Length: 123
Image 1 (cartoon, rainbow, N blue to C red):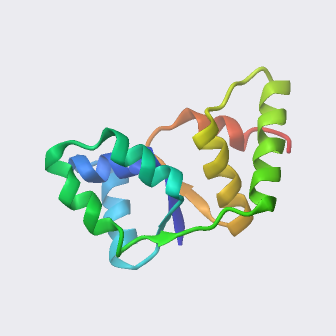
Image 2 (cartoon, rainbow, N blue to C red):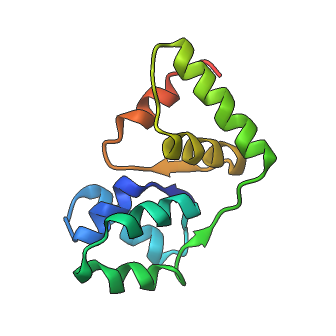
């Protein structure tokens, strides 16, 4: 299972044909695609009318991951480590990275440098 980030879902919803979109399709087919509700919210906030039905259909295909106190604590650790390194990471990405860590999942993203930066932090 992989935690699919907003950037990867956008590639899928656009039907871009990128390697990222192809991996998301494979994850969906295998029942291995997961997300956090913040990702769904980001998608609903930017979805086009043409993409609404495709996004609505995802609700039954994607595994929703929980956020608990450990997730919030880890997100704060990531934020602190990022700030100490002179980086500012958006809150949704902090939560996605923390959720992936707590659930021991890799993140499927499309060229999102924030996840590359987070991976380089000493946490």
